[in-house]
Image 1 (cartoon, rainbow, N blue to C red):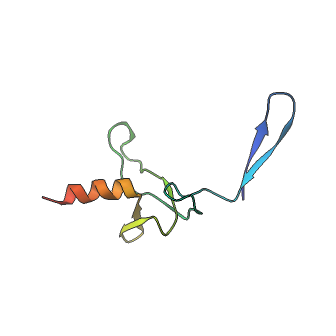
Image 2: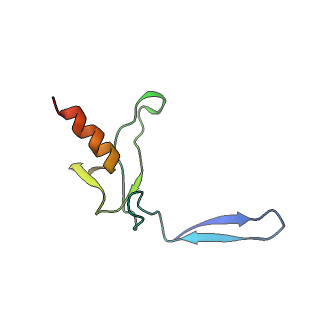
Image 3: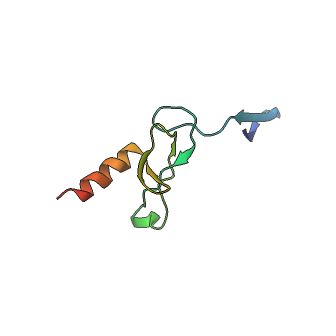
Length: 79
């Protein structure tokens, strides 16, 4: 479970907790991250969108893309 401090600004504090990240596509429990390599100012980093096993598009050993990046990658391969 992931928790973060919560401060409403009126002196009342608490904790906001969740059971982990949610899938970007369906809202289910995420277990993977998008591995699509970014370009430009973010070169050297990956998308890192949270994905569940059902929505992740496997493109290689231990490599998954989110749906938008899987479409981009498919277009780059086609002549």
